[in-house]
Image 1 (cartoon, rainbow, N blue to C red):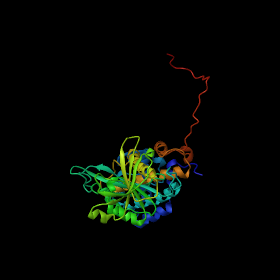
Image 2: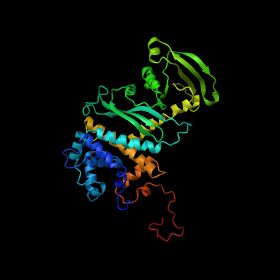
Image 3: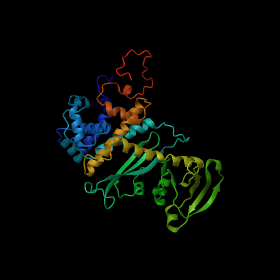
Image 4: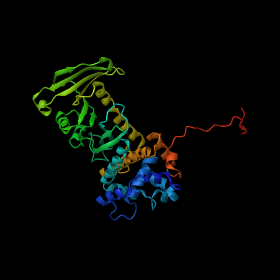
Length: 389
């Protein structure tokens, strides 16, 4: 029973303490630390994410205003902004990366039975990147343009539950396609990406591993038709072809046949051309797979709107990566709680409730459970009317 514990304390119980301690020990995170251990640092950073704190002073003032409740949060001492700033600057960001990996592994197990609506048992990933703009004079380690800096968040999203399976944070100059060089590829899985990732040499390596990809063709692609399959145009599929690439170098990069599908979206009137190495699925399923790629765009929009990754608490590379990874940990933690407690509320609703009630002492499952019953006032209300206009 969690009677007497705050909602924040109950949420932190979903973080595996033993595994987290091993991660901290691996990187020496608590070596020589007298105040604000790594566990306490994560609690403060998670508190900042949940309650939308946007500066070190904001965090310090808010926590000092609730000094009597800090012990219930798992904090032994008051939190000073200088101490938190030093911790974010000096402690290895890989601690929070490994913690996020641990939580992601747990969340994916919980969501692996989610229905994609595509009659597929394969794992489906959507790959994309988002740019987070920074000030060049403060973040000179992350060059992007001549007048500004940026970091890119390359994300491989598992569409069952919208859980990020892989995240790489780079400076703004790194092109999206380069992430394919160290992306973990799973045999039998589908990787859905836009045409910015169209590199035939890298896609062929993915094909050799036994994975499937779905992407869009670029204009003017030099290829010849080898075979055309029958199509049903009422589904939007204009043609379903087997093609071979022309050109000396590109044919060496991808020496095997590809599948090209031309599809017309009746809603927008646009005609799209898809490329894939899967030859068994119906053409309309391939089109539906690419349409599901939009989930990764919604994921980026969600975390930018509801988590604190646009204003940073430090200017060093370590501090920026620490804050981004702590935000990812918070997102995945809420997803775990939602599934573990069988909540009907959305992640947005859970986050909104927690943002205003982290210090409330009630059952977490009750606080996050939507109540549609409402409160009905009696018809014969005896309350006096103060102003009767």
